[in-house]
Image: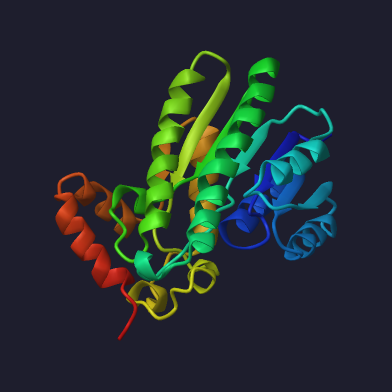
Length: 257
């Protein structure tokens, strides 16, 4: 017998894929979702280990894509939702096309908010559930040369705390995972390989990030900042003026000349 059903978005690579591995190891059936065919590879890997997995390729920037994912749940109780899908975007805001920055907002904010509402409604009706939202320490820092992305993560960080408070007496827990730079495909996909942070080889291991997020969720914590260096940076962000934080972020994220 499975421990229940875990739904994980952005599960084809990186932190989401590592969280899927943990959920499988802990005995959960899985619905894994991403907007690329590689989600089938991730699902197949876990099926080969005897785990019940359903893969859904869907555009989570849209209501329709999220509805397609929810249809795969097929009315089953959802014990865990890991809202991990996200999209980055580097370089100067004035150089970005509206289509690029809108997709970041639609994925990180609009689609994620819709999914959280739909799934929280299911969990409130059943009287139990755990939600892990992948925010970021980027949400604590004005993101020069990554302005839209950091803004979306500030939204998610704040939204997670608010939702947690609203659901406090429902049996549904909400935790926000706040990674720093992590060794995933994020920087390549965000067109940031020409930046200091993109080229930094000291990024955190996504396995460790996923383990920290899973533990915090299962412990019922409000949040977890993954990694010692990131914990220090998060703490300093509360003491440093935003204008200075923006200058510091420029040193990390401005493309090399």
